[in-house]
Amino acid sequence: MVEKLKKYLGIDFGSKRIGLALADEKNRIATPFEVYENGDDVIGKIIDLCLEENIVKIIVGIPLNFKMKKTQQSFEVEKFIQELQGAVSCPIETENEIFTSKISERGKNKKIDSSSAALILQSWLDKKR
Image (cartoon, rainbow, N blue to C red; front, side):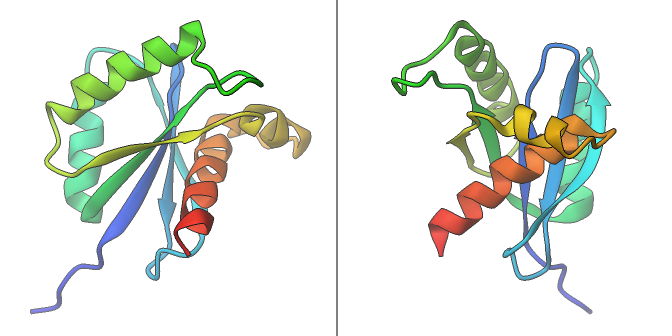
């Protein structure tokens, strides 16, 4: 039996869409994966993805201002994290997401939300090396 590789999932939470990114098999490079519409079934979709991809840790972008203080959106993200943590068995960490959407937009990428998730995850991966 072949053991599935353990992976990390990056999430860029938004009130309308949730961007997702996955780390490569060596957990060194984050790539955009998918964008889910934020709705009633989004937690279930994330649970399914975690099981399919053998996710062992989730990294969620949290918006902080220039003074590294929480914003109103930060509290929305924290609410989402609490709901997600109650549904998944793997740990969840946060990473400051300052500028990720602007950087993604600069690349004129149609999947801005998943690109932002990849930037969030890549930032976290780089800090762990």
